[in-house]
Image (cartoon, rainbow over all chains, first blue to last red; front, top):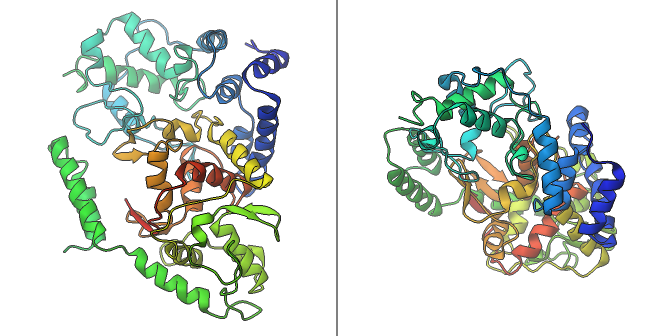
Length: 203
Length: 267
Protein backbone atom coordinates (compact mmCIF):
# COMPACT_ATOMS: atom_id res chain seq x y z
CA UNK A 1 0.00 0.00 0.00
CA UNK A 2 1.37 3.40 -0.92
CA UNK A 3 0.52 6.13 1.60
CA UNK A 4 3.14 8.76 0.90
CA UNK A 5 3.42 10.43 -2.48
CA UNK A 6 6.73 12.11 -3.35
CA UNK A 7 4.96 15.45 -2.92
CA UNK A 8 3.93 14.61 0.63
CA UNK A 9 7.48 13.53 1.37
CA UNK A 10 8.81 16.81 0.02
CA UNK A 11 6.32 18.79 2.09
CA UNK A 12 7.29 16.85 5.21
CA UNK A 13 10.94 17.46 4.46
CA UNK A 14 10.37 21.18 4.15
CA UNK A 15 8.76 21.24 7.62
CA UNK A 16 11.64 19.42 9.26
CA UNK A 17 14.67 20.88 7.63
CA UNK A 18 15.86 24.01 5.91
CA UNK A 19 17.32 24.21 2.41
CA UNK A 20 20.85 23.85 3.77
CA UNK A 21 19.96 20.50 5.35
CA UNK A 22 18.35 19.33 2.12
CA UNK A 23 21.53 20.24 0.27
CA UNK A 24 23.62 18.28 2.79
CA UNK A 25 21.24 15.33 2.46
CA UNK A 26 21.56 15.26 -1.30
CA UNK A 27 25.33 15.56 -1.09
CA UNK A 28 25.41 12.75 1.48
CA UNK A 29 23.37 10.50 -0.82
CA UNK A 30 25.89 11.16 -3.59
CA UNK A 31 28.81 10.40 -1.25
CA UNK A 32 27.06 7.24 -0.01
CA UNK A 33 26.62 5.92 -3.56
CA UNK A 34 30.28 6.62 -4.31
CA UNK A 35 31.61 4.84 -1.21
CA UNK A 36 30.43 1.25 -1.67
CA UNK A 37 31.64 0.65 -5.23
CA UNK A 38 33.76 -2.48 -4.75
CA UNK A 39 31.24 -4.61 -2.88
CA UNK A 40 28.27 -6.75 -3.80
CA UNK A 41 26.03 -4.79 -6.20
CA UNK A 42 22.79 -6.43 -5.03
CA UNK A 43 23.51 -5.42 -1.43
CA UNK A 44 24.46 -1.92 -2.59
CA UNK A 45 21.17 -1.53 -4.46
CA UNK A 46 19.34 -2.68 -1.33
CA UNK A 47 20.84 0.05 0.86
CA UNK A 48 20.95 2.87 -1.68
CA UNK A 49 17.18 2.94 -1.89
CA UNK A 50 15.46 3.67 1.42
CA UNK A 51 11.83 2.72 1.91
CA UNK A 52 9.42 5.38 3.20
CA UNK A 53 9.85 4.57 6.89
CA UNK A 54 13.65 4.55 6.56
CA UNK A 55 13.65 7.86 4.69
CA UNK A 56 11.32 9.54 7.20
CA UNK A 57 13.14 8.18 10.26
CA UNK A 58 16.45 9.33 8.78
CA UNK A 59 15.04 12.78 8.07
CA UNK A 60 13.53 13.21 11.54
CA UNK A 61 16.45 11.45 13.26
CA UNK A 62 14.04 8.88 14.74
CA UNK A 63 11.88 11.55 16.37
CA UNK A 64 9.06 12.11 13.88
CA UNK A 65 6.28 14.58 14.66
CA UNK A 66 2.99 13.03 15.76
CA UNK A 67 1.23 13.08 12.38
CA UNK A 68 4.20 11.49 10.60
CA UNK A 69 4.56 8.89 13.36
CA UNK A 70 0.89 7.96 13.06
CA UNK A 71 1.17 7.56 9.30
CA UNK A 72 4.24 5.31 9.62
CA UNK A 73 2.52 3.20 12.29
CA UNK A 74 -0.70 2.70 10.31
CA UNK A 75 1.16 1.89 7.07
CA UNK A 76 3.42 -0.61 8.82
CA UNK A 77 0.52 -2.19 10.74
CA UNK A 78 -1.39 -2.75 7.50
CA UNK A 79 1.57 -4.74 6.13
CA UNK A 80 1.76 -7.35 8.90
CA UNK A 81 0.84 -10.88 7.77
CA UNK A 82 -0.48 -12.88 10.71
CA UNK A 83 -0.66 -16.67 10.95
CA UNK A 84 -4.10 -18.28 11.25
CA UNK A 85 -5.57 -18.09 14.78
CA UNK A 86 -4.26 -20.78 17.06
CA UNK A 87 -0.90 -20.94 15.23
CA UNK A 88 0.95 -18.08 16.95
CA UNK A 89 2.94 -20.25 19.36
CA UNK A 90 5.76 -22.24 17.77
CA UNK A 91 8.53 -24.17 19.53
CA UNK A 92 10.43 -22.20 22.19
CA UNK A 93 13.53 -24.42 21.74
CA UNK A 94 13.81 -23.36 18.12
CA UNK A 95 13.06 -19.81 19.23
CA UNK A 96 16.06 -19.86 21.58
CA UNK A 97 18.33 -20.92 18.69
CA UNK A 98 17.01 -18.13 16.47
CA UNK A 99 17.44 -15.62 19.32
CA UNK A 100 21.10 -16.66 19.74
CA UNK A 101 21.95 -16.70 16.03
CA UNK A 102 23.20 -13.54 14.33
CA UNK A 103 23.79 -15.15 10.95
CA UNK A 104 22.47 -13.70 7.73
CA UNK A 105 22.49 -10.92 5.15
CA UNK A 106 26.03 -9.66 5.86
CA UNK A 107 28.29 -9.57 2.81
CA UNK A 108 30.23 -12.53 4.16
CA UNK A 109 27.07 -14.66 4.53
CA UNK A 110 26.65 -16.14 1.06
CA UNK A 111 24.95 -19.38 2.13
CA UNK A 112 21.35 -18.49 1.44
CA UNK A 113 20.22 -22.03 2.33
CA UNK A 114 21.02 -21.44 5.98
CA UNK A 115 18.14 -19.58 7.66
CA UNK A 116 18.83 -16.12 9.03
CA UNK A 117 19.04 -15.63 12.77
CA UNK A 118 17.29 -12.97 14.81
CA UNK A 119 20.29 -11.94 16.91
CA UNK A 120 17.83 -11.07 19.69
CA UNK A 121 20.37 -11.46 22.52
CA UNK A 122 22.51 -8.76 20.92
CA UNK A 123 20.05 -6.23 22.33
CA UNK A 124 17.75 -8.01 24.82
CA UNK A 125 18.01 -10.02 28.00
CA UNK A 126 15.78 -13.08 27.38
CA UNK A 127 16.38 -16.50 29.03
CA UNK A 128 18.29 -16.19 32.34
CA UNK A 129 20.97 -18.75 31.42
CA UNK A 130 22.39 -16.42 28.78
CA UNK A 131 24.36 -13.75 30.58
CA UNK A 132 25.94 -12.31 27.45
CA UNK A 133 23.05 -10.12 26.43
CA UNK A 134 22.80 -6.55 25.19
CA UNK A 135 20.86 -3.63 26.61
CA UNK A 136 19.89 -1.62 23.52
CA UNK A 137 16.35 -3.02 23.90
CA UNK A 138 14.41 -3.74 27.10
CA UNK A 139 14.74 -6.96 29.12
CA UNK A 140 12.31 -9.63 27.97
CA UNK A 141 13.00 -11.97 30.88
CA UNK A 142 9.69 -13.29 32.35
CA UNK A 143 7.78 -11.62 29.53
CA UNK A 144 4.95 -14.17 29.43
CA UNK A 145 4.86 -14.64 33.20
CA UNK A 146 4.34 -10.90 33.66
CA UNK A 147 1.97 -10.20 30.78
CA UNK A 148 0.06 -13.43 30.29
CA UNK A 149 0.13 -15.62 27.23
CA UNK A 150 -3.38 -15.35 25.80
CA UNK A 151 -4.15 -14.77 22.13
CA UNK A 152 -4.09 -10.92 22.34
CA UNK A 153 -0.56 -11.01 23.83
CA UNK A 154 0.51 -13.62 21.26
CA UNK A 155 -0.78 -11.38 18.49
CA UNK A 156 1.01 -8.36 19.95
CA UNK A 157 4.37 -10.16 20.29
CA UNK A 158 4.09 -11.61 16.78
CA UNK A 159 3.28 -8.18 15.34
CA UNK A 160 6.05 -6.45 17.29
CA UNK A 161 8.69 -8.86 15.95
CA UNK A 162 7.21 -8.77 12.44
CA UNK A 163 7.23 -4.97 12.33
CA UNK A 164 8.14 -3.01 15.46
CA UNK A 165 7.32 0.26 13.72
CA UNK A 166 3.64 -0.67 13.56
CA UNK A 167 3.69 0.02 17.31
CA UNK A 168 6.37 2.70 17.56
CA UNK A 169 7.39 4.71 14.50
CA UNK A 170 11.16 4.81 14.04
CA UNK A 171 11.76 2.14 16.68
CA UNK A 172 15.39 1.02 16.56
CA UNK A 173 14.28 -2.61 16.32
CA UNK A 174 14.57 -4.20 12.87
CA UNK A 175 11.32 -5.03 11.08
CA UNK A 176 12.11 -8.74 10.92
CA UNK A 177 8.99 -9.92 9.09
CA UNK A 178 8.38 -6.93 6.88
CA UNK A 179 11.97 -6.93 5.61
CA UNK A 180 12.11 -10.70 5.17
CA UNK A 181 14.88 -11.26 7.73
CA UNK A 182 12.84 -13.93 9.52
CA UNK A 183 10.05 -16.15 8.18
CA UNK A 184 6.57 -16.15 9.69
CA UNK A 185 7.29 -19.58 11.15
CA UNK A 186 10.53 -18.40 12.76
CA UNK A 187 8.63 -15.53 14.36
CA UNK A 188 6.12 -17.96 15.92
CA UNK A 189 9.09 -19.79 17.50
CA UNK A 190 10.22 -16.49 19.05
CA UNK A 191 6.68 -15.82 20.27
CA UNK A 192 6.87 -19.20 22.04
CA UNK A 193 10.26 -18.35 23.55
CA UNK A 194 8.71 -15.29 25.19
CA UNK A 195 5.27 -16.66 26.07
CA UNK A 196 5.29 -20.45 26.45
CA UNK A 197 5.00 -21.31 30.16
CA UNK A 198 7.58 -24.07 29.55
CA UNK A 199 10.11 -21.63 28.10
CA UNK A 200 13.03 -20.81 30.44
CA UNK A 201 12.00 -17.16 30.03
CA UNK A 202 8.94 -17.86 32.21
CA UNK A 203 10.18 -20.63 34.48
CA UNK B 1 51.48 -13.40 33.89
CA UNK B 2 49.45 -15.21 31.23
CA UNK B 3 49.79 -13.72 27.77
CA UNK B 4 46.96 -11.40 26.70
CA UNK B 5 45.82 -13.96 24.16
CA UNK B 6 45.71 -16.70 26.76
CA UNK B 7 43.79 -14.40 29.08
CA UNK B 8 41.37 -13.68 26.24
CA UNK B 9 40.86 -17.37 25.63
CA UNK B 10 40.22 -17.98 29.31
CA UNK B 11 37.63 -15.22 29.38
CA UNK B 12 36.06 -16.39 26.13
CA UNK B 13 35.72 -19.84 27.67
CA UNK B 14 34.24 -18.45 30.86
CA UNK B 15 31.70 -16.06 29.34
CA UNK B 16 29.06 -18.47 28.05
CA UNK B 17 29.18 -20.49 31.26
CA UNK B 18 25.62 -20.44 32.51
CA UNK B 19 26.53 -21.14 36.12
CA UNK B 20 28.60 -17.99 36.57
CA UNK B 21 26.76 -15.16 38.22
CA UNK B 22 26.81 -11.87 36.38
CA UNK B 23 28.88 -10.20 39.12
CA UNK B 24 31.65 -12.75 38.78
CA UNK B 25 31.70 -12.20 35.02
CA UNK B 26 32.07 -8.45 35.47
CA UNK B 27 34.95 -9.05 37.88
CA UNK B 28 36.63 -11.40 35.42
CA UNK B 29 36.27 -8.86 32.61
CA UNK B 30 37.84 -6.21 34.84
CA UNK B 31 40.72 -8.54 35.70
CA UNK B 32 41.21 -9.27 32.02
CA UNK B 33 41.38 -5.56 31.21
CA UNK B 34 44.00 -5.03 33.93
CA UNK B 35 46.10 -7.87 32.55
CA UNK B 36 45.91 -6.37 29.09
CA UNK B 37 46.85 -2.91 30.32
CA UNK B 38 50.24 -4.23 31.43
CA UNK B 39 51.44 -4.71 27.89
CA UNK B 40 50.05 -3.78 24.51
CA UNK B 41 51.08 -5.88 21.49
CA UNK B 42 50.50 -2.71 19.43
CA UNK B 43 54.00 -1.67 20.59
CA UNK B 44 55.39 -4.15 18.07
CA UNK B 45 53.28 -2.61 15.30
CA UNK B 46 54.56 0.86 16.16
CA UNK B 47 58.16 -0.34 15.95
CA UNK B 48 57.55 -2.09 12.63
CA UNK B 49 55.71 0.98 11.34
CA UNK B 50 58.61 3.27 12.16
CA UNK B 51 60.97 0.93 10.34
CA UNK B 52 58.68 0.90 7.29
CA UNK B 53 58.29 4.69 7.43
CA UNK B 54 62.07 5.16 7.20
CA UNK B 55 62.77 2.39 4.68
CA UNK B 56 63.40 3.14 1.02
CA UNK B 57 60.62 1.37 -0.84
CA UNK B 58 58.57 1.44 -4.03
CA UNK B 59 59.48 2.28 -7.64
CA UNK B 60 61.10 5.55 -6.52
CA UNK B 61 63.13 3.81 -3.81
CA UNK B 62 62.18 6.51 -1.31
CA UNK B 63 61.14 6.58 2.32
CA UNK B 64 58.02 8.25 3.73
CA UNK B 65 60.06 10.60 5.90
CA UNK B 66 59.19 13.65 3.77
CA UNK B 67 55.44 12.89 3.95
CA UNK B 68 53.31 15.95 4.76
CA UNK B 69 50.68 14.80 7.25
CA UNK B 70 49.37 18.34 7.69
CA UNK B 71 52.08 19.98 9.78
CA UNK B 72 54.56 20.23 6.90
CA UNK B 73 56.79 17.77 5.08
CA UNK B 74 58.72 15.56 7.47
CA UNK B 75 56.66 16.27 10.61
CA UNK B 76 55.12 13.15 12.13
CA UNK B 77 55.08 14.25 15.77
CA UNK B 78 51.62 15.61 16.64
CA UNK B 79 50.23 15.34 13.11
CA UNK B 80 47.64 12.68 13.99
CA UNK B 81 46.10 15.04 16.57
CA UNK B 82 44.92 17.28 13.72
CA UNK B 83 43.51 14.63 11.36
CA UNK B 84 41.29 14.41 9.39
CA UNK B 85 41.88 17.79 7.73
CA UNK B 86 41.79 19.48 4.33
CA UNK B 87 44.90 19.16 2.13
CA UNK B 88 45.38 21.69 -0.66
CA UNK B 89 47.57 19.44 -2.83
CA UNK B 90 44.85 16.79 -3.17
CA UNK B 91 42.00 19.31 -2.72
CA UNK B 92 40.16 17.01 -0.34
CA UNK B 93 39.71 16.18 3.30
CA UNK B 94 41.89 13.22 4.28
CA UNK B 95 42.24 11.04 7.33
CA UNK B 96 45.54 9.53 8.46
CA UNK B 97 45.22 6.41 6.33
CA UNK B 98 44.22 8.13 3.09
CA UNK B 99 47.07 10.61 3.62
CA UNK B 100 49.58 7.78 4.09
CA UNK B 101 48.28 6.35 0.80
CA UNK B 102 48.85 9.74 -0.87
CA UNK B 103 52.46 9.79 0.36
CA UNK B 104 53.07 6.20 -0.78
CA UNK B 105 51.91 7.29 -4.24
CA UNK B 106 53.67 10.65 -4.51
CA UNK B 107 56.92 9.88 -2.65
CA UNK B 108 57.41 6.17 -3.27
CA UNK B 109 55.77 5.82 -6.68
CA UNK B 110 53.24 3.12 -5.78
CA UNK B 111 49.94 3.16 -7.65
CA UNK B 112 46.88 3.93 -5.48
CA UNK B 113 45.78 0.32 -6.03
CA UNK B 114 49.10 -0.98 -4.72
CA UNK B 115 49.03 1.38 -1.74
CA UNK B 116 45.48 0.29 -0.81
CA UNK B 117 45.87 -3.39 -1.62
CA UNK B 118 46.16 -4.83 1.90
CA UNK B 119 44.91 -2.36 4.51
CA UNK B 120 43.46 -5.06 6.81
CA UNK B 121 45.65 -8.00 7.75
CA UNK B 122 44.57 -11.62 7.83
CA UNK B 123 46.31 -14.58 9.50
CA UNK B 124 49.62 -15.07 7.65
CA UNK B 125 49.15 -11.87 5.66
CA UNK B 126 50.30 -8.89 7.74
CA UNK B 127 49.38 -5.37 6.67
CA UNK B 128 51.96 -2.60 6.29
CA UNK B 129 49.17 -0.06 6.75
CA UNK B 130 48.30 -1.36 10.22
CA UNK B 131 51.94 -0.87 11.22
CA UNK B 132 52.32 2.55 9.56
CA UNK B 133 49.07 3.81 11.13
CA UNK B 134 50.19 2.56 14.56
CA UNK B 135 53.47 4.44 14.23
CA UNK B 136 51.95 7.72 13.03
CA UNK B 137 49.17 7.67 15.66
CA UNK B 138 51.63 6.73 18.40
CA UNK B 139 53.66 9.85 17.62
CA UNK B 140 50.74 11.92 18.98
CA UNK B 141 50.30 9.94 22.20
CA UNK B 142 49.37 12.11 25.16
CA UNK B 143 48.36 15.10 23.00
CA UNK B 144 44.83 16.43 22.81
CA UNK B 145 42.81 15.76 19.67
CA UNK B 146 42.28 19.05 17.87
CA UNK B 147 40.88 18.58 14.37
CA UNK B 148 40.09 21.65 12.30
CA UNK B 149 36.57 22.49 11.12
CA UNK B 150 37.27 25.70 9.22
CA UNK B 151 37.89 25.02 5.53
CA UNK B 152 34.61 24.81 3.55
CA UNK B 153 35.43 21.22 2.59
CA UNK B 154 35.96 20.28 6.25
CA UNK B 155 32.58 21.81 7.10
CA UNK B 156 30.99 19.99 4.18
CA UNK B 157 32.54 16.68 5.29
CA UNK B 158 31.13 17.20 8.77
CA UNK B 159 27.64 17.85 7.41
CA UNK B 160 27.81 14.81 5.12
CA UNK B 161 29.08 12.66 8.01
CA UNK B 162 26.21 13.88 10.16
CA UNK B 163 23.67 12.87 7.50
CA UNK B 164 25.28 9.45 7.10
CA UNK B 165 25.33 8.89 10.88
CA UNK B 166 21.52 9.00 10.93
CA UNK B 167 20.91 7.27 7.58
CA UNK B 168 18.84 4.09 8.07
CA UNK B 169 18.92 1.44 5.38
CA UNK B 170 19.08 -2.25 4.62
CA UNK B 171 17.06 -5.24 5.85
CA UNK B 172 17.70 -4.35 9.51
CA UNK B 173 16.97 -0.59 9.19
CA UNK B 174 20.32 0.12 10.83
CA UNK B 175 22.10 3.46 11.01
CA UNK B 176 25.22 4.35 13.03
CA UNK B 177 22.88 5.96 15.57
CA UNK B 178 21.12 2.61 16.14
CA UNK B 179 24.02 1.52 18.33
CA UNK B 180 25.73 4.84 19.11
CA UNK B 181 22.85 7.16 20.03
CA UNK B 182 22.51 6.45 23.76
CA UNK B 183 24.70 6.29 26.82
CA UNK B 184 25.35 3.09 28.75
CA UNK B 185 24.11 0.56 26.16
CA UNK B 186 25.70 -2.75 25.18
CA UNK B 187 25.63 -5.22 22.30
CA UNK B 188 25.99 -8.56 24.11
CA UNK B 189 28.72 -7.61 26.65
CA UNK B 190 30.37 -4.95 24.49
CA UNK B 191 29.89 -1.36 25.72
CA UNK B 192 28.76 1.11 23.05
CA UNK B 193 29.85 4.74 23.08
CA UNK B 194 27.34 7.50 22.34
CA UNK B 195 29.39 9.16 19.66
CA UNK B 196 27.65 12.53 19.84
CA UNK B 197 28.42 12.80 23.56
CA UNK B 198 31.88 14.34 24.05
CA UNK B 199 32.40 12.34 27.27
CA UNK B 200 32.05 9.07 25.38
CA UNK B 201 33.56 10.21 22.09
CA UNK B 202 36.73 11.60 23.73
CA UNK B 203 37.35 8.30 25.48
CA UNK B 204 36.82 6.10 22.42
CA UNK B 205 37.70 7.87 19.18
CA UNK B 206 41.23 8.67 20.35
CA UNK B 207 42.06 5.00 21.07
CA UNK B 208 42.03 3.94 17.39
CA UNK B 209 44.06 2.39 15.80
CA UNK B 210 43.97 -0.33 18.46
CA UNK B 211 45.25 -3.83 18.99
CA UNK B 212 42.19 -6.09 18.98
CA UNK B 213 42.74 -9.22 21.03
CA UNK B 214 39.86 -11.05 19.30
CA UNK B 215 41.48 -10.44 15.92
CA UNK B 216 45.13 -10.78 16.94
CA UNK B 217 46.12 -7.58 15.16
CA UNK B 218 46.02 -3.82 15.18
CA UNK B 219 42.89 -2.55 13.47
CA UNK B 220 42.53 0.99 12.15
CA UNK B 221 39.60 3.41 12.20
CA UNK B 222 38.95 2.51 8.55
CA UNK B 223 38.56 -1.09 9.65
CA UNK B 224 36.28 -0.11 12.53
CA UNK B 225 33.92 1.63 10.06
CA UNK B 226 34.12 -1.22 7.53
CA UNK B 227 33.24 -3.65 10.32
CA UNK B 228 30.29 -1.52 11.49
CA UNK B 229 28.81 -1.39 7.98
CA UNK B 230 29.33 -5.16 7.66
CA UNK B 231 27.28 -5.69 10.81
CA UNK B 232 24.72 -3.15 9.51
CA UNK B 233 24.17 -5.43 6.48
CA UNK B 234 25.65 -2.86 4.13
CA UNK B 235 28.09 -3.73 1.34
CA UNK B 236 31.84 -3.56 1.78
CA UNK B 237 32.81 0.05 2.55
CA UNK B 238 35.47 1.25 0.10
CA UNK B 239 38.83 1.81 1.81
CA UNK B 240 39.53 5.52 2.37
CA UNK B 241 36.16 6.36 0.80
CA UNK B 242 34.62 9.80 1.06
CA UNK B 243 31.86 8.45 3.33
CA UNK B 244 34.38 6.93 5.74
CA UNK B 245 36.33 10.19 6.02
CA UNK B 246 33.13 12.25 6.42
CA UNK B 247 32.10 10.00 9.33
CA UNK B 248 35.54 10.43 10.91
CA UNK B 249 35.25 14.23 10.63
CA UNK B 250 31.81 14.03 12.26
CA UNK B 251 33.06 11.84 15.12
CA UNK B 252 36.23 13.88 15.60
CA UNK B 253 34.23 17.03 16.28
CA UNK B 254 32.74 15.43 19.40
CA UNK B 255 36.01 13.74 20.34
CA UNK B 256 38.09 16.92 20.15
CA UNK B 257 39.83 17.64 23.43
CA UNK B 258 40.23 13.95 24.21
CA UNK B 259 43.74 12.70 25.00
CA UNK B 260 45.21 10.51 22.28
CA UNK B 261 45.84 7.03 23.65
CA UNK B 262 46.44 5.32 20.31
CA UNK B 263 47.31 2.68 19.46
CA UNK B 264 44.86 1.39 22.04
CA UNK B 265 43.94 -2.07 23.25
CA UNK B 266 40.55 -3.68 22.85
CA UNK B 267 38.58 -6.88 23.02
